[in-house]
Image (tube, rainbow, N blue to C red; front, side):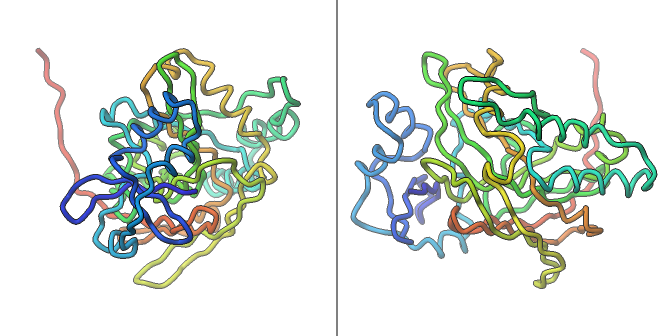
Length: 329
């Protein structure tokens, strides 16, 4: 089952489930957040809770998307309580992409990068046996719920950015119950959208390069993630594709297990605060910038992975400079 959040024609929030390709609303559900809390309280799965609320009617999914009424598949009524974080160097193709970025910035004779070193650590210790803990992955903070752009909406490129590039990933979505236990709601497509040119200058600039918006959705996949997840990533310009890459994810294509990634995120007490939501990006398997693509304002990013249903599409749009000043009280 896959869940979708959207606005109906009257401007009211709704949640629906994609059943046999048809979007059916859920009775008395505005947010997946509330649905998840109800499922925990009722001691049943999110899928079972959703099925118990399915209406017999359907809505026009294509019209909702065309009208720009899609919402992220999960959000929080208090956006500051929705943590957006992630990891990288977790996929078998990700280290190659990072090294190409490093080579473009520093030359082909540069020493082995720290990125490649940590990737190799993951290869040897990122998938521990049951009951064991593996090697620690890379981790970054991206923002809070205010940085999540709905599917189909524009991704703003800040005036100070050196670049804006897609990072097609799977994101795990989580809620923390009243006792502080993390519950995985499901998985969604994500465009983690970063400034890879800034990152390539020096790996210590990674933190800066990640402080951008992102997009998640449009559908939340419930249940287990398949071991082998395949699809395509495309960059369109003026309605025509200028690059296409193969999306290979799922644990069979990763150097870390999802369980290992989750352990190193939720071991911190601050990330187990009751009532919070988390979107945790699992890393990008391919990058257009690693193939010499220089994106520009007006380019559309498309992430098309059939197991997640409808593709995630967003257009990057350059923002004017926003001037500000720090004042003293």
